[in-house]
Amino acid sequence: MGSIAGVDPVEWLLESDPAIRFQAMRDLTDASSAKVAAERARIPGEGLGVAVLSCQGQDGAWHRPDEPDWLPTLFMMQLLRATGVDPRDSAVESAVARLVAGYRWDEEFGAKPFFDGEVEPCINGGALALGAYFGRPTESLALRLVGEQLEDGGWNCDAPRSRRSSFHTTICVLEGLLEYDRAVGSAPEIAAARERGEEYLLARSLFKRLSTGEAASPKILEFAFPPRYEYDVLRALDYFRAAGARRDDRMSEAVRVVLKRRQPDGRWLLDRTHNEALCFPFPETVGEPSQWNTLRALRVLRWYGSR
Image (spheres, rainbow, N blue to C red):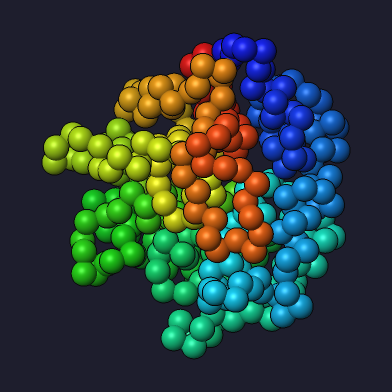
């Protein structure tokens, strides 16, 4: 993978939080399935996993005094999913059961249960992914998102005012549909929607405007974690990796962006973070080496075949 100054990026990941260590073992080493499973089993009781679980309120939601409950609830659950925790773990099942029993979206969104979603497709993509991952796949939400797909193949939270898709909304929905596929098996309409959404990104080389061929935004070439609802090329490539997509030459420029952002010691920095909805300080600092970005970049490069 390339490193200097005595830093082995994979070893660095293996010395970290169980959530990082588990995924590094699974995605970047030849560790046995038994060792990988044993590491995964540590997540609910140590490090980031237990930090997320311990912040849940008795009413099933997560709370911050300066935010509406849906924000910390959605993004703390997304962070829990990002750890790769086993959804069948008893502590995780208990947390999900409390969320299902106690949380409702605000009245303006129909006061629906959490995994039924609300109105914006970027948020609903996240809710769909969470429901599917944690054993509560919601067919009505998946079909609603399929029905909201725009003519150009993507999605936009500003629809119907805008008929042009957004990179940001599209990746949120694609991640939700992928997780739903994994949970229930692929249905023709879901598969077709995902294919059209993926083509929307690929036609734009994962980061360009069709009209000019220029990057849609400078931020799209920077890597954020947690990403919240924002798109960047590393998030997109990690989606295609997770989907088991075939290598496509239209990804090659995005892969070169990832390679270009690798530091001389073989690691990647945390360029940005969207941690304002979390219930505790995120344990990485902008501008410093990031285990989350390094993990995701290394496994993307391994999948794509770059060294």
